[in-house]
Amino acid sequence: MAEYAYLVVYLPRGMTRDSARRVLTDHAEYGEWELSRLRLYADGSRKVTLRRKIIRVVRTF
Image (cartoon, rainbow, N blue to C red; front, top):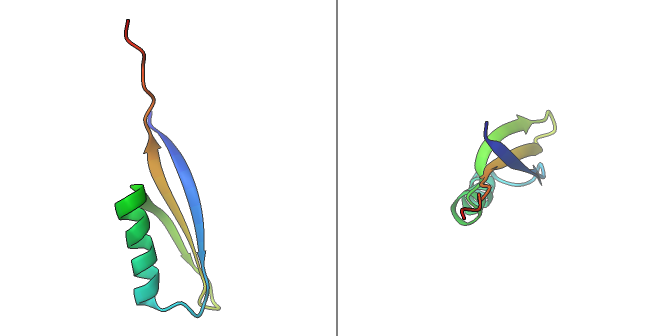
């Protein structure tokens, strides 16, 4: 079973949809994160959970 590292990003309510997309795209392209969960609150703020797979290196002799 795969293990994942998680990153939680809070986006304020004043942030436009295009700006939020740009922030998440940067995380995906340069940090290799993928979207795990997005929560949109009634006040317009967003809580985004990103994840990426942890690769464990196995030593060979």
